[in-house]
Image (cartoon, rainbow, N blue to C red):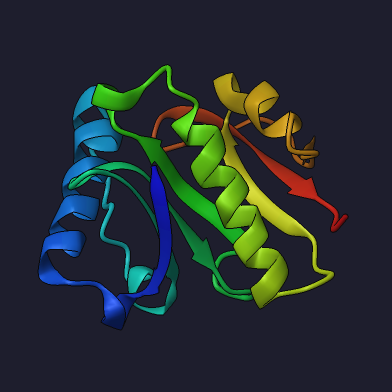
Length: 148
């Protein structure tokens, strides 16, 4: 997988379409969750795109401090159903953490994790930092990771 990081204005129309399509495919359709994915935060985010050939196989977005939390955040982490089981989610998430270290050195990183993925994020050093809560009907917790 080839991973690139782009600001919103650098995305091509085809890349933006692929991002929105993948996020809708997984977060809205597969998870049966009607919510507003296009939330006004994409325009000021960094977009991590993982391509296998011409397919968007994995994606995540990075939000600067103060957008969603006081810390920088990673969200919308997703792997295409077509590419699951190939550890591309780990690859895109690791690339996102590395990008944050460049953009916002020595800052904690906060995420809102679906509860069933707590162990996935714990493998990267994240620790639970909140009680469980529902986000769009799905159980989540906030998790935080200190720089290392």
